[in-house]
Length: 140
Image (cartoon, rainbow, N blue to C red; front, side, top):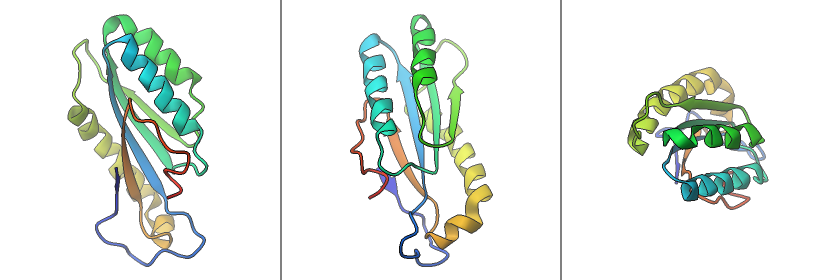
């Protein structure tokens, strides 16, 4: 899902891409979920237009932690990447992850507010680890 900003400072300028920040929240509890995460990351790499930023918070079963870290190490992010691992061995819910990521999104919005106003404001897209993105997801 992509969420439009509540209010646009100005109308988007023709030819100026709309800046999109992506929040990805994930708990990897088994190898099947890890395979889905790898497919999701590959589909993000294949975007025709890169997002402005990708903010990721994840947790995993303890026995999968290294493999999840490897998946992110191998990921060639098409944009600046903020990667946060939830502490502790317990699974974090998607909403717990998103609550933390919202803080990062607020900081990003404050940092880029002037340039993004020309493009119609900062948009936000949400993703889960089992999403496979269409190559033009950000472009559209």
